[in-house]
Every structure is written in structure tokens, then in C-alpha cells.
Length: 326
Ligand SMILES: [Zn+2]
Image (cartoon, rainbow, N blue to C red; front, side, top):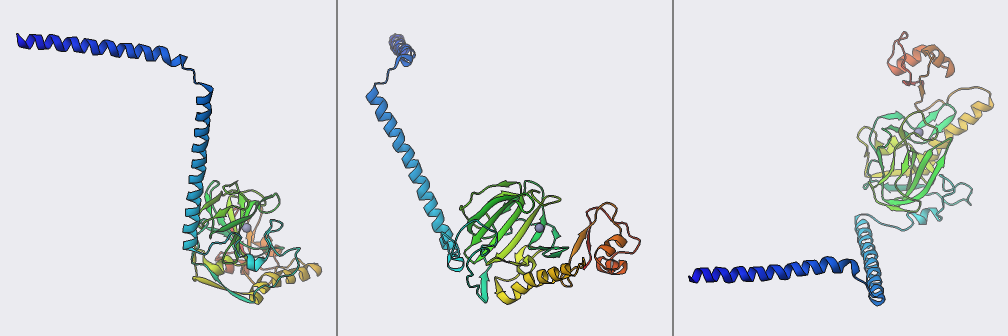
């Protein structure tokens, strides 16, 4: 008896609760579409929202300050890297000293390589050195279009440009160790001019823009505009620096870069299409090429080509194959 009355009571309570709830639900459903926010409220809301956005901006700023501190702790950080050496910052030329009043180039300098990160690893398609009538001031590293290209060191983007007959889409970064690195034939930029970048940061996607016959990264290392043979800085098998420091000697580097150019202009003046005598040079096989025609083109002999490339005189050549002629 007692149990039954308790049950009845509970059911009544439940029913009452349910009816109140349904009333509330109905009120909610009806009231929602008709909510009119007073102007004052709306203004307060807008201000709060604005403040929230400012807070978000502030938070981002705090984050980037912390990031900069981290970078700074890792290696010396400069807003304009190596400005003491170069004395200026502009995007006029890849060679930053071109068309400028002469500034002293240190006779010798130890360049810190300890923070180096390989921009990309791959087969070397073409080494640094004299290539027919042009000096090839970097190495060509084979890649697939769209591959990530990374900053070799921390630094700042000095040039972000396009050169139809040359580098294609290219970047020049300046680093606090005094080096500048050049990245050519890119398909897409991932950084803007003047951006600060950290070593290893993706800066672009590889491609085949400009003077290029296939997807590759043209990579240069320059110090005060003088292009250094990347093979002297890096082991091009492992892409690790050969030493923690590179000992730059201006006289040696200038000779390596200018000496061949000087010889070439003399040989051109003499009307001969002869290659300079030092350094390796390669010919890319095109349709119709034979060892004989290549030998004639470079003023050498078939037997010498065979010796340099480990070939027999009757060997068939593949299109695109690199034949060393010097
Ligand atoms: Zn190249």
C-alpha cells in the first residue's frame, strides 16, 4: 500500500517535471528566432570580439618572439645577417657587390658550417666548373618537381625573383656566417623576400623553370659574391660539410672563379672554341651525338673521351648521358 502511494507520487512528480521541461523546450524553440539583440549589447559583443582578436595577435607575437629567442640561442641571429661584411641590403643582383663602390673582401675567413642542413639530397647532374662558354657557379642536384627545398642555414631572404633565361624562379638567402646561398629553377616559393628563415626550413618546391632541361636544384654557395665550389664545402655523396668550418682564402677563390673566365675570354678572342684546361667538364648527349662528334666539338680525341668515361670506342650513347670531356 505504502509502496503504491510512493509510486503514484513519483509518477506525479515525474509528470510535473516533464511538463515543465516541455514548456521550457517550447519556449526555447519559439523564443530563439525572435531574439533581438539590443544595439548596446551588439557593440559590447563587437568590442569583446575585437579584443579577442588582438589577444590572438598578441599571442602570435609572443610565440614568434619565443621562436626568435630559440633561434638566437641556437646560433647567432641577426636581423640583417652579416651586414658588417656586406654593408648593404638590397635585391639588385645575385652578386651583392656588383655595381657598388668597392668594399674590402676579407683576405681569409673561417666560415662556420656547423648549422648546415642539406637543401635537398640527390644525384649531382652537373658539377661546379667551366661548362663550354659559361662558368657553372653551383651544382645541379637532381630532384622531382615539387620536392621540398630547405634553407641551408638560418638567415634572411634577400632575393626572390624570376629569370626566364637563367635561374628561373630563384631565391638568394644571406646567412650570418657570411655565406649566401642561391637556389635556382624552383617551381614554387614558400617564403617571401625579407623573410627570416631557420636552417632546414622549407623555402621552396623544386622544379625546372628558367634555363633548365629537367627538374633539378641549382645550388650555389657564395661569399661576398664569389661562388665557391660546393664540392669543397660539402661531401656531395652524403651532403655533410667536409669540416665544421670552411677556410675561405680570397686569392684562391677569386682565381678559381675569375681565372677560368679570363682564359676563356682570351680563347674566344683568338676565335677558337677551346675549353679551359683545368677542372672537369661534361657534355650532355643529344640526339645524333657520337663520341667522334663530341671529341671534335671540344677539340679532344675519342680515345681521351673513352679514357675519361670508362667507355669503349664503339659504345652507344644514351640521350641525356653526361660525357666528361675534360
Ligand atoms: Zn646549375
